[in-house]
Image 1 (tube, rainbow, N blue to C red):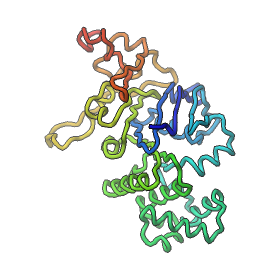
Image 2 (image 1 turned 30 degrees about the horizontal axis):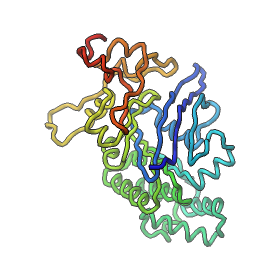
Image 3 (image 1 turned 135 degrees about the horizontal axis):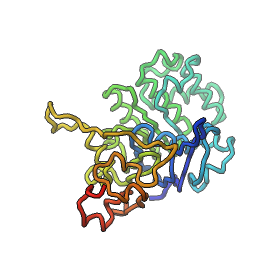
Image 4 (image 1 turned 90 degrees about the horizontal axis):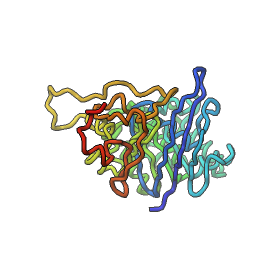
Length: 334
């Protein structure tokens, strides 16, 4: 499968009053054509920062790139000018943000917001742009688009506003769609409708999707591959089936254990991950998950593990997968 996006050794920091926060630390991954890749992890692990860095939407300052490359169809996006990035965002990469109410202009009618984008980037007349806007609302299953196009965002439900956001992102037929928590705060029925809509559009448009989420149920339903992030680093990556059936990193296992299952007893407690992520003002020398891991070895505290390849598609960053670790009881040396 040919890759449409390659992120190579990307590091992103934020300069704050208290010092530098290393939000994303030396991550590398790729997205294939027509592929859906989910990036999962706790809040603050670097998922949204990674997504916004691909779009070049991070405010600079306080954010700055410490190193790495973001290669989209052979071009390093970090070397593009702001004007070039505006063109790429309008024609090749689309993004659906997690809160449509704050992303849409509350003072403008829905139709005008879509029409303005079409006119700016496709050079159509106002009448042609209006027809195109109605087509897009119809594509995302907004009922009575000819009527709804004249309404304001507050007149739409949360699910309908999210459909409008998808329509805005799809106006230019992007080859890559980044969906950052696209179903946050929506009830489960609407969630299912939005996800089904995204899959349907992907099938019709042959686009790739990066799905940013912490909902592992959505991941299982939507993604081809999964990237697990923690404290700004990738901990594990693999096919969705590999991650769910054979997780190799303790953090991935704990994430999966925290999801309620149908075979659980009603009085059975949900598992939680005790402790808190490390302070990225002073990142740990070794494994970032050391303090919260009940299987950690002494080496985990002082030395960062490299990646071990379990299959051609599955890799993880954990000392427990080292051949020498198998000869001793896990956790006994912490």
